[in-house]
Structures are given as structure tokens and as C-alpha cells.
Image 1 (cartoon, chains in turn green, yellow):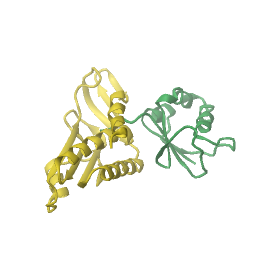
Image 2 (cartoon, rainbow over the protein chains, first blue to last red):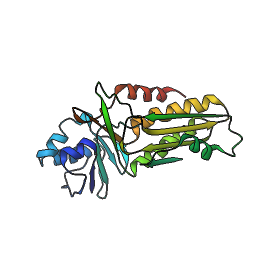
Image 3 (cartoon, each protein chain N blue to C red):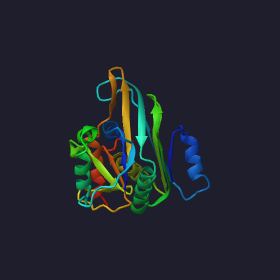
Image 4 (cartoon, each protein chain N blue to C red):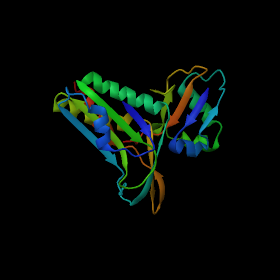
Amino acid sequence: MKLLYFAWLREKTGVANEDASPPEHVITVADLIQWLVQRGGGYKTAFSDLSVVRVAVNQEYVALDHALAAGDEVAFFPPVTGG
Amino acid sequence: MIRVQQEDFNIGQEIDALTSGNTAIGGICTFTGTVRDMGSDRQVTAMTLEHYPGMTEKALAEIEAEAAARWPLSASLIVHRYGRLQPGDRIVLVITASAHRQAAFDACQFLMDWLKTKAPFWKKEEAEDGIQWVEARDSDDDAAARWKTDK
């Protein structure tokens, strides 16, 4: 699974992208976030308020209950501010 | 057509390239977004636009396809820049062309409203008192939401 972080989520985690192999009990996006938060440090700060975190799986917006698959590209970012 | 690029664009040249030779077009509408020197109550000296390569192009193409499905457009173009920009610099260009003006006007507004809430770009403002990420506005969500019930 490939994880990507953008804008202040990249700054807070200190990571732009990484490969991850979450354990079997990680089924949904919410599970994945919980697993990442357990790493502590920047991850805990980055995901402290999920109301300002958006998630895309394979470049499509998804909700927190979206079920993940092994080769997914999962991106975390704040609400968009382009235009 | 959509384009994501660092370079500036020339509006006149873009209109010509998009519409020349297409004599079914009766109206062309353009919107250009530029960098303001006033952010949320502070003087902005520069702005950096980050994006999600791959998803950005995909999202813009989907938004454009949605506009083409809703209005009888002869042609449309979205150009969005990324990287570090100065106040006054152009950020985004939307061009819509149709046989009649109303479709061109409406589609142009729709494209901007949807782009602002869906395309994965993030603005970071530099000011004298520091650097900060621009927060999303509820008013942008409201502007996008009005197209959900329309049509």
C-alpha cells in the first residue's frame, strides 16, 4: 500500500510518501488512520482532527468507512484551496 | 481540455487556440483567477500552490466532463498553475464556448465553483508575520452546493 501526504499533513507527519503494510485488522480508511496514529509523534498531531482531513484512494475521494485493498494508493490531505 | 502547469498562460492565445475555426460558437466566457495581496486580513508577499499530480488531472477532467454533460458546450479549457506565485500573478483560467451565451456563462461559473472544492490544490501564503496554509472557506462549499440541485 502506498501512502501519500499533502500540504500540512505532509509537514506534520514529516513524510511525503511511504510504503506501508498494515496488519490484517486494518480494513477501512478509519482503521488505517488509527494504526498510523499509534505511531505517535507527527502522525498523532496530523490526524488529531479528522474534520479537516480528506482521503482519496486511487485518486478518488472516499469516506472513512471505505474498505482498502492491498495495492491501494491512499492520499491524506486538507480540504482543497485551489482556484 | 485541461492543463496543469508551472508556467503562466496568455488568455488571448488560449482563446484563439481553443476556438479558432469553430464557427458554431456564438459566445465565449473566460474567468481568470489571480493572486491577491490581501489574505485573510494580512499582507501576502507570495503564495505557493501544491497539488497532487495524477489526481489533479483526473479531477479536473471529471469536472470538465460534468460541465459538458450539463451544458451544450462547443469547447472548454481549464488551465491551473502550481508552484510559487506573486501577488498579481495568474493562477487559473477557465474558458467555455457555446452557441449561446447562457451556457457559456453558467458552465464557466460551475467549473470554477466545482474546481475550488474538488481539485486537489493547496495554497500556502507567505506574509511578513510568517507562512501559513490557506483554510478552505464555507462560502466556496456553498457556491459549489448550489449546482447540486440545479439542472
